[in-house]
Image (cartoon, rainbow, N blue to C red; front, side, top):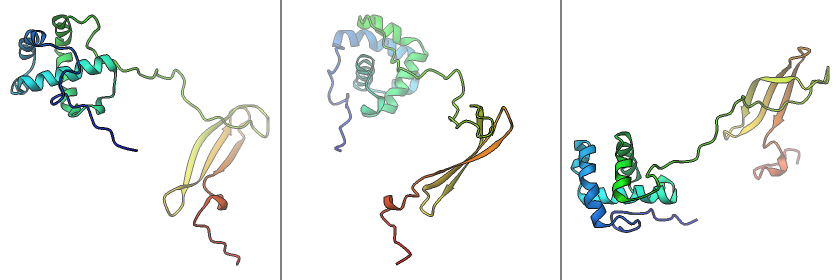
Length: 179
């Protein structure tokens, strides 16, 4: 698979629609809200960073697709923490916010538990896994997983052994010992 080039906003400007008039209105606001570290940035670098932030807020591409994404991300976080993004949004004349919101997975309400087989003694679905042990081969691959479970209804304990990669027909390095 060929590695794709990252988007470079310093060399290839104009991916977004920030014209010179809008940028002239934005630049004093950025100088007002940014610390002295970023005041040493040139206007071309600031414009490239703003182009990247605007591009990300429109197209929702990952941060890592952009060249120098760490410095752009720090620039974005500083603007957002100081409340300058909403002011910049008004000065540009965009109706959609400049906030880069990523969809997140919702937190689980209940803990995730492994499905255990029913208890062989009382035949109820009350087996709970309380310990797991992994055994490895010489190469560091998992050879087998031993799961210890206990029935919450009748206190019966059980051991389940799950073999992994123990199938000789799948192992290309298998040499028969009998011949």
